[in-house]
Image (cartoon, rainbow, N blue to C red; front, side, top):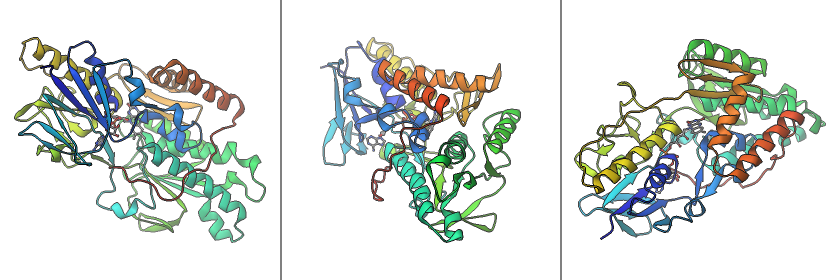
Length: 420
Ligand SMILES: Cc1cc2nc3c(=O)[nH]c(=O)nc-3n(C[C@H](O)[C@H](O)[C@H](O)COP(=O)(O)OP(=O)(O)OC[C@H]3O[C@@H](n4cnc5c(N)ncnc54)[C@H](O)[C@@H]3O)c2cc1C
């Protein structure tokens, strides 16, 4: 019987595992509740009307079309029967496995305030991004028709909660949109007067970067017109705005870029987990006591970075996927020795608008326009397919040269599927 590997999640980790198993002589079933692999690092550009959805997502089935041993299933996993080695699907289906790879990622968390989600959407899926794009663009449209100054001011106030890379990238892009791209398109409002307020609970933005890079990012964002509020925790989000540091701020658009919660993979398999729900895995990325199950990427946690936790970023998930593929190959060749995973960090990157970025490679730090170009080249390199690379490069060059964005489309109603 051919060894059957079931991979749940076709994100960075799951796809890397499938790619690493090419030619290994195994049968693979890859299950994802979405039909596409998503390049999340550029999601904020869909949310801020820079790129179109099709430029950062690709059908999983199409990506794996040449791999005859791979079956792609669209389905939502809801559990794992670890005794009988079966994955349980929402529609009642099951998938039996010899080896299981759980790579179901994470989602934003509201620190116990899930009721804030309707007012402050986070950014994780294409639906999230188009919801954000619609809310941002609609706010300008409504402000154009609004005569009451207070209501107009609230429509032109954009609050971003969380000063990590996503919050910094969102606030920089919205500030550029409001202050540089849109002014000539409106007649009754001056979009340059729009307020973009970034609220961070800690003492500085980009806390995972060195202090000098985070200070540079702070100054660059302020130059773009972003108001940064540090050491301020948000205590309320509603359709009226936010309350932070005990003060209310009227705002019709609130975006959530703080907090992460892992998928339910640890609960499915009854595994120990940390406070964010990430499965605590063995040094070889297997589930404790279940060597046939691997848990990787954002849904797992492991201190494999010189004794520190591996960061929740795409290269880490990819490295884990490749590691699992190599372990499975070795096991199949009769070598059952435990292979310890060690994470290799190549750097932290964040962009601030379309002319500056910060990069910390550890051995060298780069900032400003050079960092922006390096950031752009790195992201184009990691996109899938020549056509997408060319399309994104062209979109960026066009925006860079003309300041004009083509993705100003308001689509989708207020209803949106809740992703977990
Ligand atoms: C807005 C944003 C910006 C980011 N920017 C960067 C960046 O600049 N650089 C960087 O390195 N990292 C960045 N990251 C982090 C990076 O995207 C993640 O670390 C990476 O995607 C983790 O890979 P993964 O394989 O663990 O999970 P994911 O890539 O999230 O994939 C999980 C997959 O599992 C599927 N899934 C989930 N639950 C189920 C279920 N129950 N049943 C079936 N399928 C399921 C999902 O549909 C998804 O396809 C960013 C993340 C976000 C959200």
